[in-house]
Image 1: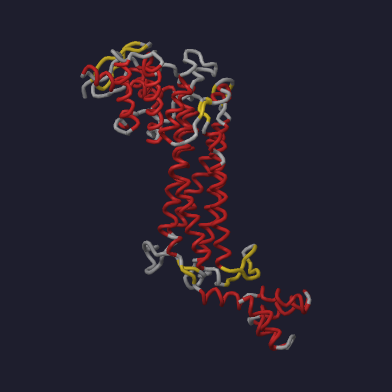
Image 2: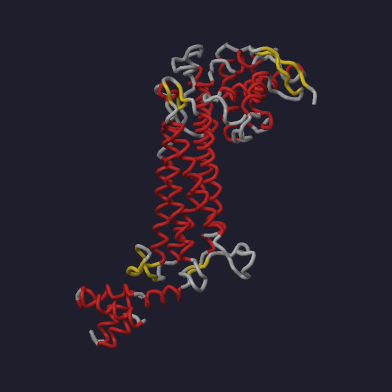
Length: 457
C-alpha cells in the first residue's frame, strides 16, 4: 500500500494514499480501533447533509469563497449519498463527543473537494477541513444534531410506517377472527371465554399506542444543537448560520427541525435521545408480549394449545422429522431483548452529561440508531412472514372451551359460587365437562343449561 505524509498539530503521520481523510482521522484510527463497529449509514448521511448546507449558508453569508463552497457542497453531497462510506473508518468507541468522527467527515469532505478542484486527493489546500468544512461548527453541536436528524428521519420514514403496517395486519386478523370463540387465560390457567378477534384486537391496540408514544418524541428530537458551537454560547458561529442551515435540513427531510431553544441544554444533556429510546423500548416490550402469545397459541400442533396455525417457514429440528418451529415470533422476541438492552446503554449514556457536554454521544447514537433499525426491520418481517398467514383452528378453540372448568362461571348467577365450584371440582375429579356433570346431576332444566352455557362456546 502506498502512503502520503500528512501534518497535524501533533506532527507527521502516514495516511493511505487513496484515502480522502487525513492525519487526524489516521491518528484516531490507530489509537481507537476496538470493536470494528462504525457508525451506521443513517448517521453518515445526516453528517454529510449538515456539512453540505453549512457550506451553502456560509457562502451565502459571505463567509466562504464561492469556488470553495461549490466543491465542498459537491463533496458533502457525495457523503450524504453514501458514495464515500468506505472513508468513514472510525470505531464508535472513541472520544465521547464524537470529535473523531466529525473530523473524519471534515477531512473526507475537504479531501474530496480538493480532488474536485485540483485533481489531487486529500490534503488541506485549497480546502481546509477545519477552516472551511467545519466553519461555524463544533463537534459538540454537530454530533448531537446528527443524532437527532438520523434518529427522527429513520423513525418517521421507516419505523412508523412499518409499525402502521403491523397494526393494520393485526387489526385485520381481529376482524377476521371476530366470531371465533376461545378460552381466555389468566395466570396461565383457564378463564372465561373471549373471541380470538378480541385477543388480536388487544395486539393491534398495543401497536397503535406504541405508534403514539414514539410519535410523541418528534418534538424533542426536532430540536437541533447546531449553532451552539463548543459550549452552547455560539462562539465563532454567525447568528444567521444555524437557523438557515436547519431550515434547509427541514425542507429536505420534510421534518420540523428547529434550532434548540436553549443551546446549553441541547449540548449538556441528551434527554431527547433517552426519551426516544424509552418509547422504542416500551414498544419492544409490546412486541415481546404479542410474539410470545402467538408462539403459545400456535404451540403443538397436537400436544399444545394449537388454537392458531402460523406459516411454516423452515424445518425446525435436525433430528425430529416434520417439526416446525415458531421462527418469526422467536426472532421478534430476540430483537425485543436486544432493544431493551440497547435502551439500558442509552440510559447510561444519558448519564454522561457533565457540565456543558455529554461525553457518551457515540454510545448513545450507536444504540439508539441500532434500536430504530432493528425494530423497523423486524416489524416489517413480522406481518409478512407470520401475522398475515395465521389461520384459526376453530374446532380446537371450541373444544378447549367445552373442556374448560371455567364454564362453571356461567352458572354462578343461578347456582351461587359454592355450588358452581363444587360442580367444577367434581368435573375435574371425574375427567368430565361442566356440561356433563351439570346434566347428570340435573342442577338445572336442560333448556336453562343450554341458555347459560351455549353462548360461552
